[in-house]
Image (cartoon, rainbow, N blue to C red; front, top):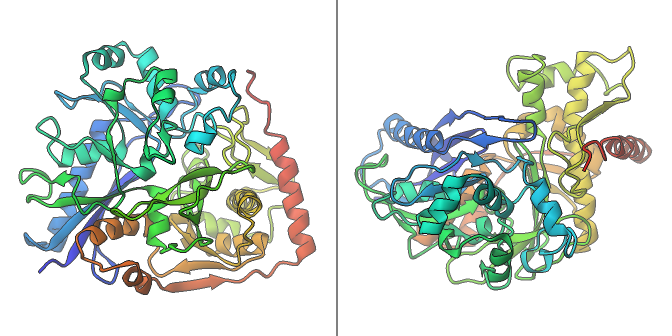
Length: 504
């Protein structure tokens, strides 16, 4: 009898493999980090071969730790760092360039040129997205224009494009020996190349960006009763398993948080911060700097859409204080340091390291610390770093309420940073709504497991998933309204200081 669904969570800083049981509980897991490559200011890359190597390693570690017998796993689901882009040779599996990470800003010039005809919203009516360095399409164009090996392989029909989900599934299902070249609707919706209505690649945009259609993967449902493919017996799982679930990481968290009703929202706190609001089968255009995106598509059921607010730097700010400034040795220590002071001492940090994402979309912005006095200590800086995450979340929430017309009454949260109770309390205070932390915070991997499990009948329906969801802790707002307003006004002032730093 099958006991588990395997989820592979390939994130910005590392890769997890987690086995979930029928109750949606993580039972066995393994994790490995991979290197972050910074060739130039604003450039961020990953080694795709290292990612595949680490993916295999965590799968094998998980199976070994749990002593998992053959036949115990019903299906495999994938979730991934969405917009990170790579191109490889279909014959050899060799990457033709490093993966260009979603945070990378090298495509600003491409986006600026494209915006000369129709502005930043040139493709928004079709794709739901503004022209921004964030998305995969301009990254592919950059490779085609700047890496001769990529253009040469594309001209021969040997180049394959994909986001990391596509890369992992291709290798799991055979690689150069018949691997499935697929993505799902959620990841495809982050490329700037997919039509939200047709759920297919847009021929006009491909022509405009000079991207050959032959490079692109097939777009499939997020939960696929007809599997994308099967793992190879000689691969890391050691048996043939159906690969039936695939969701971009933030959409996976939406599913893992069981936000299946229009108006339900979640916020994931990781390297960046991402809030998604389920808008049902309706495509809701944004006029407030948000993205219109796919939420999920389960089998033959209609696609479900979402509004998204994407924040580039949240947990990455904590990593910066740890790795670049040496403030502490382990990320969780920031909470202890921040608790040594009552507030941030009037200072703010705006971590616009790679520009500002939602709702501003300013790639010319760069990070600032403002309000510094001799009073400020390392502890105040640590507190300001945590508060920056909460302020950025409020920016997005306010935009979401404007676009949707729905005032959120509570916020479901997940991701690594939700263990920080000082941050969660400040988040509730600055929003003025309760913040709800679930019992299972690995909701990104859980969402991938749910998508895979629904496809093979491991879980019967959405109600079965809802029954698995439970509350660990609710953080109630306790801040006076006038103080909340004053602190947020200071934040908005600080944001203005980041703008127009990079000369265009």
